Every structure is written in structure tokens, then in C-alpha cells.
Image 1 (cartoon, rainbow, N blue to C red):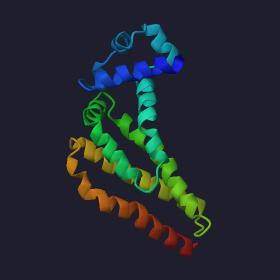
Image 2 (cartoon, rainbow, N blue to C red; image 1 turned 90 degrees about the vertical axis):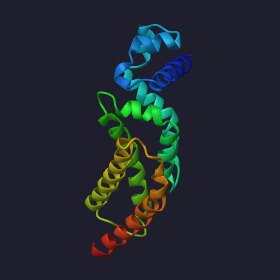
Image 3 (cartoon, helix red, strand yellow; image 1 turned 135 degrees about the horizontal axis):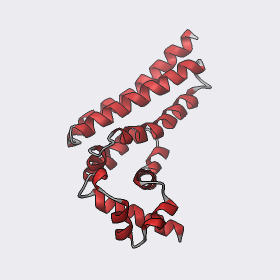
Amino acid sequence: MAHDTKNALAEALVDCLKTRSLDEITVKEISDQAGVNRQTFYYHFEDIYDLLRYTLDEDISPLFAGGDDLLLKIFEESLKQKKIILNIYHSVNPKWIGDYIMGHMRPFIRKRIEADAPRRPVDPDAAELLVDFFTYSFTGIYLYWVQRNMDENFQVYRDQIRFLLKESLSHTLDSMAKSS
């Protein structure tokens, strides 16, 4: 029952985000659309951002379990939800979406580096620097793309993004392992 209520609230939020930015949407509006009262909303979520996090986790988090094409999947899924992503980005707190992506990207990058650790041992501080570098790089590219209204020509970046994550990370790990 609780999961159904949470999903109803998430669907109501998504419906609202199709037409307005996040800062224009109220808890009352979401609750009314989901057929619950405000208190029920607050029983499940602290605020609208908590609901947004839950909603994105349900839709986007499974992508982070994917393999090498994760970055491309994020762009493709975001493009499918373009209006919603832009309405989140153009809200009072546009930084939130970058923080959300970074929070999921960091563990993905860390796993990639740790998977190579047996073949290419790297100093833990250097590995953490790589995690930061690739996390911030991808997030910056993503936010720049969103800021430009999610130009559909992101396909141009497909090979470059794949190269940067695969080859550049691999080459950097090789170089760091040799210098250790």
C-alpha cells in the first residue's frame, strides 16, 4: 500500500513537471492529483525534492547498473524526458540535478577503477582523484547539454564520450600503475 501511494505521488509529480518548473509545483497540488492529503505526502516524503529523488531513483537508477554505455543511456533517457528534465533544471535549485547525477556517477566510476585494480594497482589517493575527475567531467558535459536545451545532436558526442570513459580512463590507469 505504501509503495502504491509513493508511486501515485511520483506519477503526480511527473505529470506536473510536464508543464511547469519544479519551483511552481506545490505539495498540495501533488497530493490532490494523487488523491491523498498533504499529511500523507509528508508521511512518505520530507519535501518535493525528496519525492523527486524517489521518482528519479525509480526511473533512472536502474541505468547505473548498466555497463559501458551508461553515459549514453543517461543522455537518451534524459532526452525522452526532455520537458521534465528542463523543468527541473530551470527551477529555483538547478544545481540539484547535477548533484543527483554526480551522486550516482561517482560509484559507477569508482567500480570501473576498482575492477581494474588487480591488473593495474593504483595509489588510493590517485584513484580517488580519477573518480573525481571523471565524475565532474561527465556531470559538467551533461549540465552543459541541459543548459543548451538538450540539443538532440548529443549523438555527435557518442563516440567521444565512449572513448573518454573507456580509453582515456584505461590509459590513465596504465600510466598511474607504471609510475607507482
